Length: 169
Length: 248
Image 1: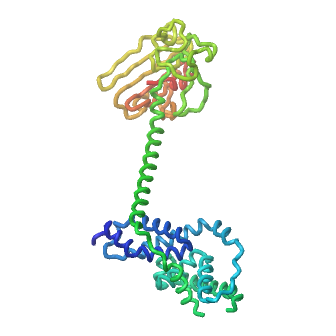
Image 2: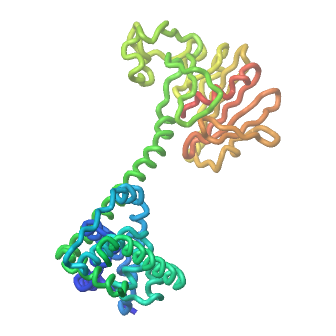
Image 3: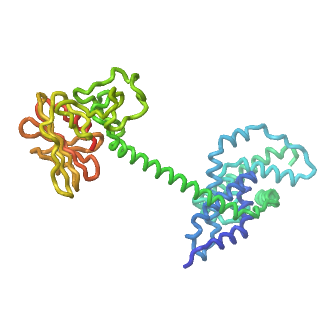
């Protein structure tokens, strides 16, 4: 069985770069952080690229590096994040477009979730991974994925109800 | 409200315009090269540090100061590979009353044969009388000793043995320097019984009693350089100090 070469890395990044950047952006919450984390993740993958089987799909491997990096970085920046989040929440204004308002609020609330819970929701509902695939990417059990997804959605629903109440929803 | 589908739409909207930079591959490879460079630089620094740390004791062992040098240090019982042992002046050597009166005091070490501050400016061997021919690699001997005979050199081309002896009221001292293939200090031991373990300037050494109230200490001062210092009488009390002063 052959090993992956430099050309296959270029092809992979060209083909899957956008999708990985979007996943990273959703998990990080900030575009600049996402680009930096994606580069770091790809560099880590590039170090061991030659050891990957030529016939295997490298994306789960890269995705797992990405998820681990996001979670590690979130833990490191937890204090700063808490200071950032300590700002008073913006008062929701009545908007003629409730759907846009709802999605904006959803994304705000998604960013406030813990890094692991956020990663579960992104992998499950953005990447459309199965519970088993999500568990593999996160390095945890399927049961943990289920509980994290359920708690994450419940928290989003609870916060949405609170935030969108003034809008009459 | 179907939260899951709203969440999907919200996420799709959020990253709809996100696309990876066209230079992503180049950026990743540049980052990889930078990382490798950093690792190589760090490894080089570590290797250089290790080399320096390994060379300092070697350098110290070669940087012998002649016997009778006025640069004496406070006597200490601890032995360190990075510290020069005490070097009191050889008997009879005049010493300036203060280091301040010496040109260049405290800044440089003067090479062997050119002790500082000599009024005549010529070469001055340490010691007087019987110690006038003290070998340059012996930097300390107790008072009251005179050379029993000039240092004798024996052996073959592969193994050369230099033996120097001093006698006097203070007892006797014998220093044997062996240059040649040596497996360890045990080859140099002449004492009977089980030798004790000690160290000379951080180098492992063996010590033992000699017949007739004498005592000896042997160690490898360098690759294929063995030293044995034996002393008898009251000079036995100076054995370790004499050994510390031997700089082959």
